[in-house]
Image 1 (cartoon, rainbow, N blue to C red):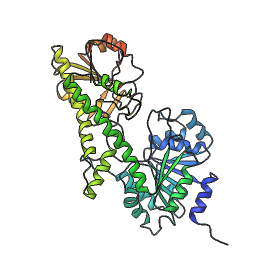
Image 2 (cartoon, rainbow, N blue to C red):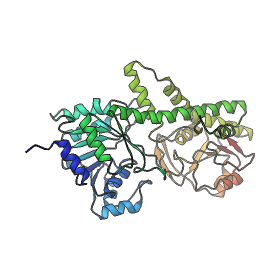
Image 3 (cartoon, helix red, strand yellow):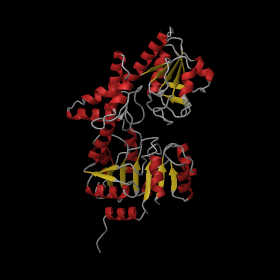
Image 4 (cartoon, rainbow, N blue to C red):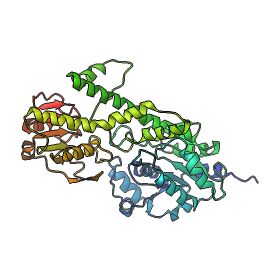
Length: 438
């Protein structure tokens, strides 16, 4: 009787939904992925070093906006979810999906400490017939050059004994139209067998899976996507800086330009870029390119332009106050929004954090309002928000709109505020001499 290969055996368990899935990292990527897998009948174990997160998921308590509360409660009630803060469960799992942070250090170099740590923990417990898939965004070569040697150190071989793939997450927090399930999924394997197993796995829950020739190609896809956005946002920001000097409304220019039905795609300026992707991912590619003696000029310039925007906002704030015969030093400045994106509770890398610090450093009395993020504890900013009362608006010498949230009545803001600097064009259609646009 012929022996069934590890690949065939694992594919069989995946296709009949008896494979046990592990998701490492229960954040904005990991938890939605866990829910989608459990919804179709897989038993999924969530592994997270944060005991509070693990306990909440085990109780069916949701903390991620892109997850439906009832979906999480339902799969927990059906016994399809378990959680752990320990890697001891790894040996019992068939598929391990890694969704851990990949930040930059202070020198804008990749910090793969989370990926290395998780890979080493898996390697200690690795057994034949497992699939390991990295979803964290990283530079091309991470899966093959960093993870594979760690996993093979115990003697098992990728593509024969176990399977290794990269499938970059494409989560867009707060996007109600494109979710984990209906966003096209790119998958690249370390080898043909790994690709075959990974495709079988992702096709169980994702509407359309796109196969590429290698894990390295899949890694490049992700960093290109976010670099594309970073470069085009930087172009819009640079045009905004130029329009400011020329006395032209950049918003009028862009509104007119985007009426062209071909050859252009809408990108808008703002106070900077935030979140876990655009401010970080292009620098992964920039860093890796140096290994090939290649300079990524567009990426470097885009990063420089986008990082300058908070300083420009503070400079323009000073000019707006000066027009009202007030100095920035000693003025009361209210920031509307600390989240990096509309209707989201995520303030990672938010440009509002840098604007807050720069204003405070210049001597302004800075407060903020954001119902989505009422407290901020990051990048040297530790502050609690204020209620958006008429008294608060009237007391502010300047209101700076840094995030456009749908729960803010901007007509009331324009009515009550003394002066407004709108970096998001949230006051569109509200004509007033009080309002200065970015």
